[in-house]
Length: 53
Image (cartoon, rainbow, N blue to C red; front, side):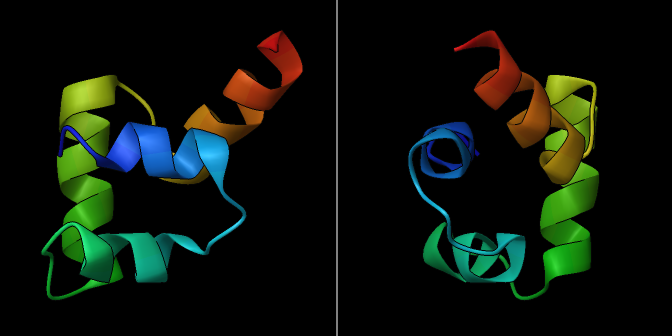
């Protein structure tokens, strides 16, 4: 999960591809873990990061 936020912030890869890159079997399990750790689903977090930058 430590790599997920960086990949979301710095690439245009879909969440499903990032999930596979960081070792999750499905986008759904990555999204659940991401939301638990970051407080937002991956897509919402990515949008917020891009607006803030």
